[in-house]
Length: 395
Image 1 (cartoon, rainbow, N blue to C red):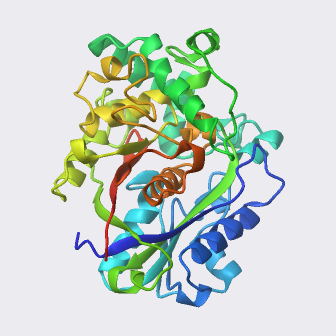
Image 2: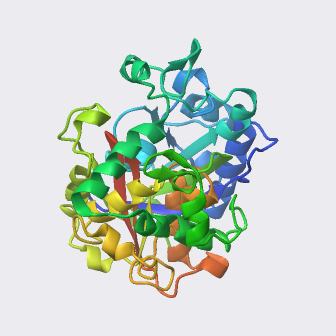
């Protein structure tokens, strides 16, 4: 990367379970807040990016894509994009940064909207995989349909295999894994938008019902309705924005393994390819990271990302998180400081970027870290994944 792309503003709608607002309303709220946060006008926005775009013709997994947003806000853009595959939930950040580096635009509005909570009130199969009872699930494509004869109707069942393999190979225990859920809940208590804020003890975690062994209820993220928006700006244009921008130091993507989730190494999936690519594009090292905002669609994914990114040793994640102190806000590697998706709400990717920027800007309120100059964000699981390294930088 040329290191000429900065984050200049962020915005987020209400986060509700469910929201009374439509996906379009939530998206507009987040995007207008982000534009104002950067001190820009809508006329300044000449690029739009999101993930996964107009998926399934506006299904709750992605109720609005770049074409819809461009029309709603009346934007005159030089570039826009959204696609399902690739770096996963933060693909909009990576694609938008590449568009700026290619000289296609100056300011890119990146957003991610999800309305699965309200949709589940009407149809509980909207977030399932493949087809159940003739209804289309969230990812109803031929690949997922190959799983349904074996009763794999939920991502939980797939991810449980990864967790079980880590338990088998490295000795991870439920008591250790539960520290991720407990840490996220403790952090969510200081996030006004978080879905779940009540305290969680290890006994609470261990007594929650098993969804797919060894994963329990509190190992699974919480569906919500929300939209998050991020403004990316070219270096020369970032100088004129409202606040000191956050530099996108490096990004990671790539996949050297087969697509299907059950053919990829069950203890690391795509994560090590992504991490290797990101660290090869910067002089910074894992020891330079002040906080990690890591995908917790399921708690085991957070642990797998920690190991892949070098925040702890391969197979040493269980020992590293044992007791929870090291990953707490006062520990050596704070994680998911807004409560993540396990307690804060499934904002699905961009919520981590939003929180990383709030920490670097010192705007995280009661959950603010004492020091946060550099943050790593990683999102995705299975064959989809991307990461970005963000740091405080003076123009």
